[in-house]
Structures are given as structure tokens and as C-alpha cells.
Amino acid sequence: MCTYKRLRKQTSIKNERLSMNLLTKLFVFVKWRIF
Image 1 (cartoon, rainbow, N blue to C red):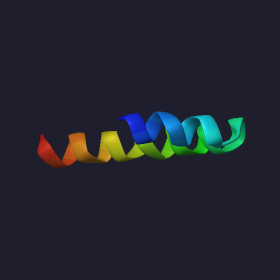
Image 2: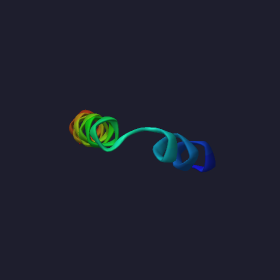
Image 3: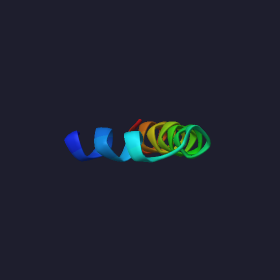
């Protein structure tokens, strides 16, 4: 988590938004895989 926060600080708003979008997609995918 610490490294993630550090990376978020370094990245720009656009990259942050993209990464968040990818994370949400990944989360949904994993959720569907489990259930």
C-alpha cells in the first residue's frame, strides 16, 4: 500500500485516472471470477 501511495503521488491526474479505471475493471473481473 505504501508503494502504491508513492506511485500515485508521482503519476499525473490523467495516469491516475487511467490506473483507477484499470483497477476497477480488474476488481470487477476478479469478483466475477470468484462468484
